[in-house]
Image 1 (spheres, rainbow, N blue to C red):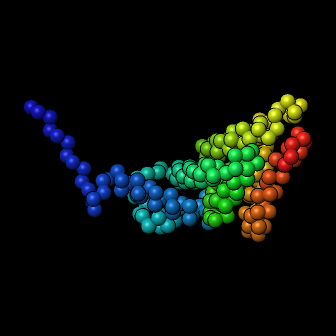
Image 2 (cartoon, rainbow, N blue to C red):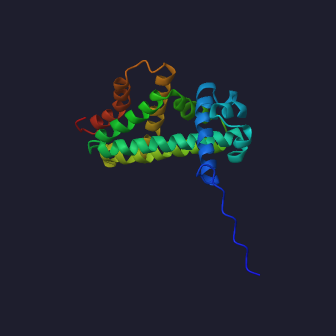
Length: 215
């Protein structure tokens, strides 16, 4: 007997089931940004996320088993957005180490200022959800540290720094930038962004001065 051909997948409104599920998943992430970004992860419930997404709880469990899984997906989505904006800004930047550091820092600050919910998710709650989220947060920091390490080696050739480990310094600089951004967010973004950018750039300018280069 010949094999029975598979039944064609039914379309609703011209949309395949897989695409509908993808769209529902995206709506859940949008709802999560609203709930996690305003109430915080530990005060959030599945029901609240579903209300914000305009979906029933049935569709939550179609894509996610737990709230931490949704948080991880939400963080990853924001990370991807930020990386895309950063790379776009770098393509337009002045091709010098400081000329490329300035827009990268500015994009990060604008990203959390323009939607403080992003800042709460990426800078605050990501540290206390679970090990998987903490690992992704750490990977994000390492990605930026790797990029920064390249610029530090251009700013200050390693032989000129003696016993200073520029790779270790790159990790510390990223930590400094994150802490400054978190403090700025905590203070309601009261300080003008130009001043915050220049404050972030000061350590890099200081490195150039130590190495005898013009800032």
